[in-house]
Length: 206
Ligand code: AMP
Image 1 (cartoon, helix red, strand yellow):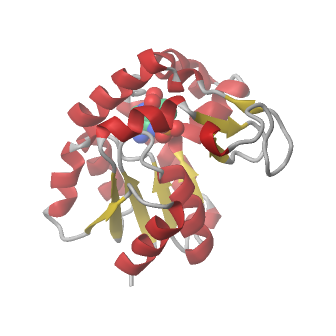
Image 2: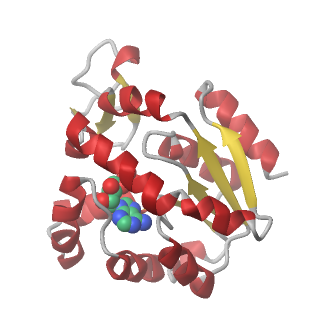
């Protein structure tokens, strides 16, 4: 199955994508994770992406589309994929339709006022990529799963978050209309317990 996850930053796309990709046995492709890995490895793509990410802006379409095209051509995507964080503009959605048309689009909805506290309190494990909220952690510095250091992403600081939310509403939310038109959109309430959101997503795909 070829799936796309849509939703504002902090909606829980990464957490849910991990659960759904395991259930459906398709690779979880997060463009944000790909960029963070590229920045860490100082690749040409990472160098191009860094200044945009630091400001909470979108990386230019051409850079993202080339990266996704290359990734989708790999063998593990032959039986399907789950794209998390792509497409984020109508231009990217049109490019994806030419590369590989998705079967379904999951739109995870969460009100803006909840997103700010979710993102400022978010900590990510630098090793296993697990995502946690400080209210659920006994120790804010250490991953409860693998014991590695937890990171407070630079783009999860309040000044960058408001920019990311603005960018989402201006550039990514129009994709809801784009996919509504072709009957592939499934909207799920993301303001629930993660396990209930996962159930709702899997039910919407049956
Ligand atoms: P994420 O981890 O999905 O929140 O992405 C982190 C950052 O990576 C975003 O704020 C953008 O700067 C960049 N990014 C990730 N995916 C895309 C995309 N599809 N188009 C443009 N920029 C992206």
